[in-house]
Amino acid sequence: LTAKPKLVRHGEFALEPGVAGESEVFQIEELTAAFKDFWKQEKFGTKDVALGIGGRKIIVRDFETQVDTIDKIRGRLKFDAAPLLPQQMGNAVLDFYPHTIKELDTGDMVAGLLVASPSEPTERLIAAIQGAGLDVEIVDFIPFAIARAARKAFNSDGEYLIVNIREHSSDIIAFKYGVPQMVRIIPNGLTVREKQGGKHRGVADGAAAFEAGNQSPVSPVDALVAGIRNTLNFYVGRGGAPAAVLLTGEGSVSPELIEKLPEGLQLSAGVLSLDNVIKLGHREDGYGDIERAAALAALGVGMRGLKG
Image 1: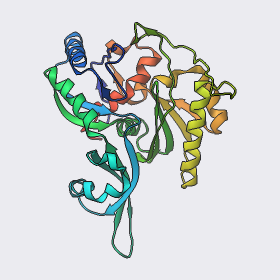
Image 2: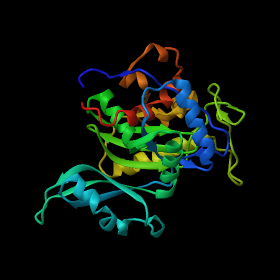
Image 3: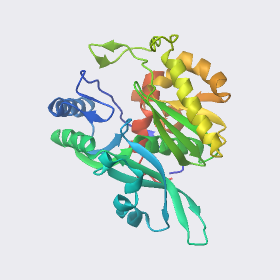
Image 4: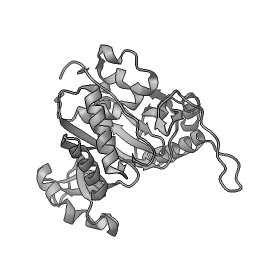
């Protein structure tokens, strides 16, 4: 695709507390009912679904293997990657994202990112979706989906650290020339919407401070900045040289974060949202900053399979 694709329909729905969170389903019947209502309300013209998963239970590791077709590499991951994973991840769903070819005397190797996701949470998500009469065509890893959207925005130019900020955790993607080089999921996030009846709705809200034992109060923003800084230092230590930090997800609209991040990281910071990637239809003209930033991950998942 040479031009920006156009977003023709988009929506979001809130869940009651305890139904689902961090890509885990706790009440399948309630989530299935929510999907049914959502599909009816938004009047989507398809029942095919691309599912994005994320969260702190997913493990990402550096991984190298002999050069081969991607299907053959994925086919032997269960055996080749076993030494890199905890024993409890023995039944995990595995995937591999190659990023570099290494020419060695012993034969060419391909380096990339190994992704391991516990199978049960994904199976429960798929069951809830199928229960609503929908078909799951693709299961995608959210950090890779965000990198896909960023590639459309920047035409594979430059090197950046992309941070997708959720309520309880954040994805950090080292993105170089259009390809993810490293992914870390940190246990720091931001709440930016008021909770009404336990649902994620409302306007941007300030982050409250919390007490950590006998230490001084540390705000969620300061904790998040520290988590990003630690990951940035690790990536730079490996030879990375990002030109800027790009924020997306709901937490990216926090004014306090935008103010503190450049000084805390000694890098410029900006926001990556729908406008950078896709042409918006008339239904999206009224979206606020929160909706535009929160929708980027879903957009990246939906873009899987598009050429260009």
